[in-house]
Length: 280
Image (cartoon, rainbow, N blue to C red):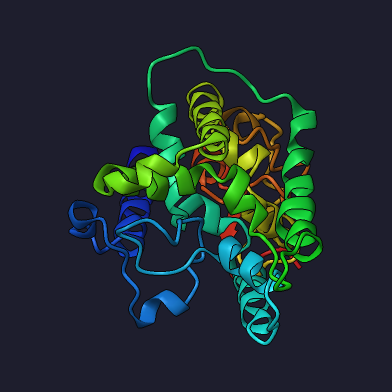
């Protein structure tokens, strides 16, 4: 049953990844899809500049709005993030996010595995506040336009999905490589090594989108709950959780990606995942 569920989630993730990056032929030409679907945000983290990307990245769109001289579009971006977050919470991270799947695949690489130093969990909230919200508004150019600081200085998904493929197909861009690209490559290397050693390292430490959905996890319609009358405190759910969450103690944890592994390891069927509340 657990194996069947594992393949079900992986298939769902692959389908979501494929739908988010449907224009695969663009990798060869180095062109970006700029059709009507690019005006909509992908629920997960997927770079706008990825040649295959069919939609925009919500974090990139949010920064563009924060740093622009026209804030009209901000209602859509913020409203989209709030609506998706309130409805699904970090289910997006566990099932739909394209970069989440990439992280999990890198974690499959044989290497020593470690638990995350817990104090690093706060870093993603600092990244959200400083690089996504404050800097695009505070650091503006002569036209009053702010810089998409997270995309420009940090985002490893942008470097992997957009920067590297575009450099491979556009030799003229290689002349512009400087310190900024080296900085982003540094973040990419650190992220990928981190993902090999620690499950979903970027998701837990640096992802501002994970921070947003994590905050909304506590009130999301799709939720996790534990039937305390059935629970025998065997701790199997806490042991199996790769995000290092104890579902019995914190079923609404901001770190829970609703992957469902705890539900399927529970010997008493005490864990519920879904849209309706079983315990009232």
